[in-house]
Length: 278
Image (cartoon, rainbow, N blue to C red; front, side, top):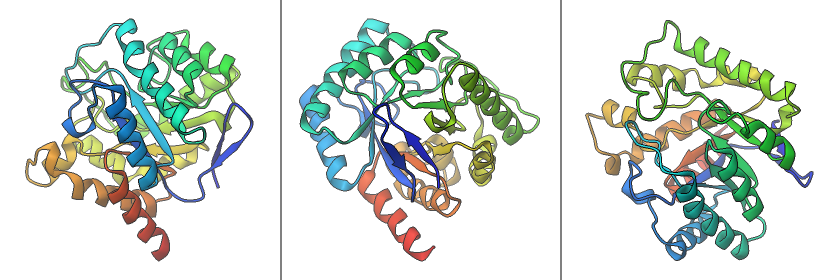
């Protein structure tokens, strides 16, 4: 049974597939239903997700959809910190992760009450990220990406996508351990949609259990992504809920520790039913 150790020493145990709810403090994330542009709206969304059973809330201040341009560090901090502060004031216990690849944003977010750093670059975009994670003793989500959000979908190529993503994550785990971050602080994410074509994403999802061999908790972040739309006949993000739930159920059957989704209640209930049947 996997677990992560929080900075206060508490263990968060993955005794079933847990649900992370997405809150994007951005005007341009690919799915409009996840966007919030006001602290009160974000807090209301967080309250709803907590009520629906989310175990972790993931707060982001920059869209990393394909082709997106980065925002300034100051703008990202201005977007995420007030939201984290408001959620933490409302609820002392809910786990909060900050979706950022910038060390300074991570530091401000942790000081505001974030428990986990969710870095799409696996600490490769900002060399100081590893120092922040170590200094504050927080868990880190290491995600695979090929390129940057701006160029990652420009004809990405793999000879063996599962092996190459696995090897990348293995190297990042080793890097983390060498820099004083223990395995019980690490979650790995194969990075669905980040520098990968449809067939790459499907292959990674089909073989998601392979990543458990890395010895860390495994996150699958597939919610409403384009591969679901393609598989279901080119449906837009607004019509990809059922496909998302199907993958969440598959992930639960494969023993994935955590799924990151826009729709907490629907995915939570489906996973709960799968757990009963298992």
